[in-house]
Amino acid sequence: MLNTNFPFYGIAIILSLIVNVIVVIFCAKKYNFTRDELIGALIYENVGIIMGAMVLSYLQSPYVHEGFDLTRVGLTAYGGVIGAIVCLVIFGLQFKKTIGQMLFTFMPSIPIMYAIGKIGCFFAGCCHGIEYNGFGSVVYNYSLAAPANISLFPVQIVETVVFTGIFIYMINRAIKNKFDFKTLGFSFILCGFAKFALDFLRMSHTGQISLNQIISIAFIIIGVWLFFIVNREKSILQAVDK
Image (cartoon, rainbow, N blue to C red):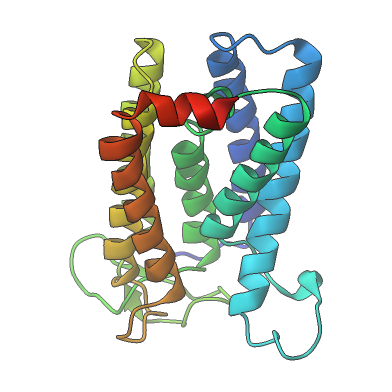
């Protein structure tokens, strides 16, 4: 039974941002970023993460018809990823960086950021799982987000394990200088499939396809395109990156 009000959620968010910077600095060495470019890109990325996460959360919230007020919502992972990609593309266009340079530098850290964030969710009780009495079940008796005194499936911890595995795959490819659009596409497929499947284990799932699952399908489609088409059509990549 979890019974603590220690602010693990905030700490997890801060830790995820710190880890992101460390991974990005490592990956950036391969793609000729100057220090000023890297600092600027990180600012763009983090603004995109925070704003994207809050905007998508707002659009999914019950307050969407009561006026635009981001102070009343939390953060959503897909919103953060989409916001980051949009801002990174803008940075690349503005400062003459290719799409490959931007994505290969900043995407490997996304799964580990999500994995760390889910630890915060686990302790806060948000994004909690379905009712479950088996091994590893958790009961909250303090959380404002989770129902009290009900055994729940620890879906947040499962997400942490799964996305840590995806991160290990991506960073291993980066270390071996084999991170390309095919790797990025496969990573999109893995992340999309994992999010789609694990969403069924959340109590918030209503039995219908959720918005998160729709976005997951979109990520899988993009991943397939990157894996099978873009990686083979070098002329397309060259045209896009110019």
